[in-house]
Image 1 (cartoon, helix red, strand yellow):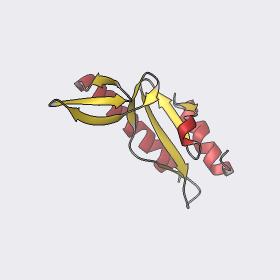
Image 2 (cartoon, helix red, strand yellow):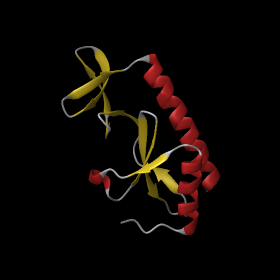
Image 3 (cartoon, helix red, strand yellow):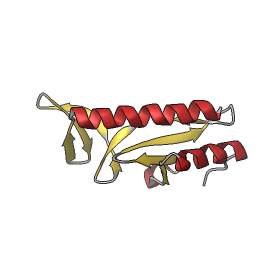
Image 4 (spheres, helix red, strand yellow):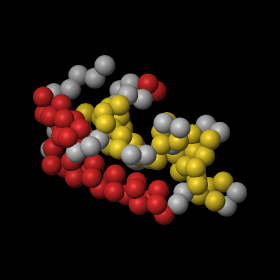
Length: 109
């Protein structure tokens, strides 16, 4: 369990008010998951009493964090053996997610 400061908790509350769901990803117990639509990211407490992204936001595949890879000449989001084609719609959703989350994180510091 993470030990979060009041400022970090307030940031997560602002995320929730902006439509992000606070979720747990069991493989990442030292981070807080945030999800909106089909996208998710991991946040960790930082030294300035705020939160920082752990890695890059990603598209969810079967509710799990994915990675972006190139398979057989095609870019896809992958989780284990499952994959989703990368489309402009998915990239646009991911870009909006990242922009919204970045704005909340910056305003929380």
